Image (cartoon, rainbow, N blue to C red):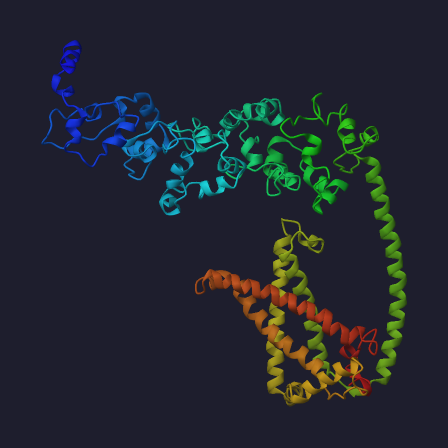
Length: 599
């Protein structure tokens, strides 16, 4: 009777309101009536949603239910969101009302702890999709497994501990109005981030609003840092956590993202070397050794209230810098303010430091240069006397003229290849300075390296032919072949040097020392030539070889060069220069002869 009265009053067809819920439950036993009654829609009629059903039982299948009938505003907001737009495009996996709020017949109020959109459940609800790598893969989102990283953050830790107001997904991203960070309507859009964070961190936001960073942001500077640039996003941690980007040992690295960026410093006219000058300071040195009490960027400039030195409120304003320094250096602040914090000696700035530095550079060059010239003259005189003595005492032919020429060519090529090769590998090193001019330096270095490499390769080919095609070369090759006696001699020399044997072993014309070095040279030359040719003709090589193999060749070429260089210094130089019996040099590479006792 009551439905009849209502129909008359509102002039609506009686059939639309004639069905009791019990009429539906008589057939639809798949819907648990007890759970439906407890849901947020429990007091509504089934026909409130299924308005196209006029009688029970009904023959036609109910049409799709839309939430828009009652939730028009929420629906409009949702349809404008990323999820809503995805659904409109036909992406079936995109989050719909049901995906977040749960099964239609058992929807719970968001204040109900059991609701999937309640504060204690919403994170898990979002994670069902956003922490599923396979499901998210087609959409190329910027965050991988955001829920897992969130749980390790200060917000996530507070959430796990039961903190009622710990930030959850919807606090930052929104719910029905969720948008990507590139959408100006998004809560996590660059220019909206401070306001989003201010919902919980109002005091910090009010401080930040006065800073030079905020002024830049509100002036439309997209590069101006906001909360997430310094603190992170899903990985936000307390500043007391060693892994936090705002922990004392990480502050400089965090600030350097902008202040060490050439692009940003040039674009906005910022001092380009503040990070370098800090690192060179007393504070920076302590910081690099891991000190967490050494002054860092925030110690002097502040945190959220960073202001330019021209601002009277700035902690680095000339009127305030004494107090700022005095926080760590009691009673010394006034004196510390009389000088630059970021020291940049030049004729225009920090002049005293500049001229003192220049004085010592000149003094060192003159003093040490004079010492070198003095001692070099003495060394040359003694070396000449040693050479004359060696030439007179040389009674045994060690190297023919042809071998000596080969050795000189090898020496020049090796030094040239090592120098130009390492200059390529380490372009910023001091020894690479001659090739640091971009207009011609790299090209000249490449030409020199390749010419030396070509000569080296031709020398190796000539040496191989000389060994095989000449009688003397064949005898030389036979004498250089390793044998069992070499092993015995190596053990004998080691035991002799350890004092375990009284007599030094007697070597043949070529001992294991020369043989090891010679065959290492042959093997290394072969490796360097093969890898060098592949790298020299890279475009041709890539037509036949996969890139990973080219990369492997590059690694081999570098490490083989490093190994050869170290072997020359440690092994060859010892036996031909630093051996006390030979020092200052074995002159056979020039005279071709050695004393009999040194064979």
